[in-house]
Amino acid sequence: MMGRSFTRRSFLATTGIASAVALSSGHARAARKEVRLLHTQAADPKMRQWYMDAIAEYNSQTSDVEIVCEFIPWSDAYTKIQAGLQSGTAPDFIHADPTGYAALLKADLVMPLTDTVSKIGWTIPPNLRITKGDGNDYVIPTWIEILGLNYRRDWLAEVGLAGPFKSWDEVIAAAKAMTNPDKGRWGISMGLKREGKCGDDFLSLYTGFGGHLYAPDRTPAINNDLFKQTLEIMRRLCESAPPDAIEWEYAGTRTGYKTEKVGMNIYEGRTIIEILGEQNGGYGAGFPNLMDVTDWQLLPPLAASDWPKKAFVRSGIEGFSILKDSPNIAAANKFLIWLLGDRNRYVSMLATVPYMEIPVLDAIADDPSYWKNPAYQRRPDLIPKLQEAIRVAGDSALPNNYIDEYPDKHVVIPETAIAVASLALDDAVLGYVLEKKSADEVIATLQGTLADFVKE
Image 1 (cartoon, helix red, strand yellow):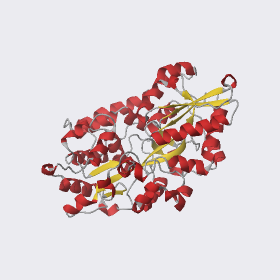
Image 2 (cartoon, rainbow, N blue to C red):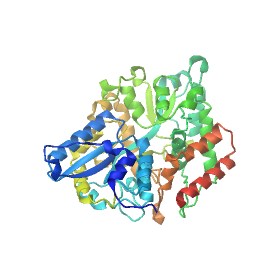
Image 3 (tube, rainbow, N blue to C red):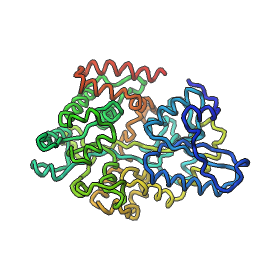
Image 4 (cartoon, rainbow, N blue to C red):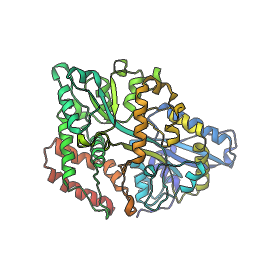
């Protein structure tokens, strides 16, 4: 186990958090205790500004505490947290995605937050809770990011097809039908650069079909027909991706869709908000040509006969964790109760990134007033689909597929998220798809890597 002595000055130097700006009030700083937050919401200017304003408001109301926040890209969270763990240091609390907080769960560095959730007044759907198998919450989820399939209705109509797709065979057939290099069109956007997207998508499908990376005894559980079948689905999808997909990562796959090079992409709601644009409550200039021809659906099951019962949601759950050896636990708790305990404040936070950051609470998702946001009203046909996705996420046996969990055995295995963050799954998929390695060869290599993660 890595050391857990907390000298935050060295952590700040290690992670770059030293440049954090104190969002201060007028209180004398010498009398105020700094409580440091590491936050992964760096990519969305509106959300980042919302947090800066909220923290400034909170700091203006306190005389003894100052929340100091550093915003970092989500893609840097795992690396920065790992660096902090290796130096035996950490901030007081973090907001991260699973690849960030999984490292802290693995090292047993976060404290139970069940009482904090209760004081906030939330009832989190059971399958959206992040536990360690002991019944306690270790993350307060602020939102879920729901992965789905975006597709061009107009392109499909040209080839005599229409969604929704009830199986991956149907998705693959549609991708092939839309592929027409003479028109500069390809069927689907795949991220084949070694930066996380292809491994992430693979895990979404494999776990959505019922697979696990680890067995309950924490040994690798990938030497099976389902793992091989999922590899083959990825290969068949890539046959309808454009040649330059070899250079596409997360953003590249969205760009491929927005620039009308491909007819489908697998992504969270960011694709939609970028299509809507600023004028419709989204981001950027928008893509008017795509606004009314893009449709969205849940990810389909393996067999068409299982649609829609076994359609699934890959929900990336993001949220707050408090480091259990922090000297400022009480102050961090107090801030989170203030931040999330006011319903209107919480809704205003989510409103800064519609479609992408979706509420974890059924009481909000089922409230018609929540969906009055202009971005949702521009495409009201998507609202019931999103509501259904939230319900599916709450009911799913494995909504947070970044962390293997066996609830009946009280076993939680955060190393699954580390397999994504370390790009081990990218190596497996790219080895099979691009390097033409056999499934058995890919599995043998990945089994060794997964076993090493548990030993570390």
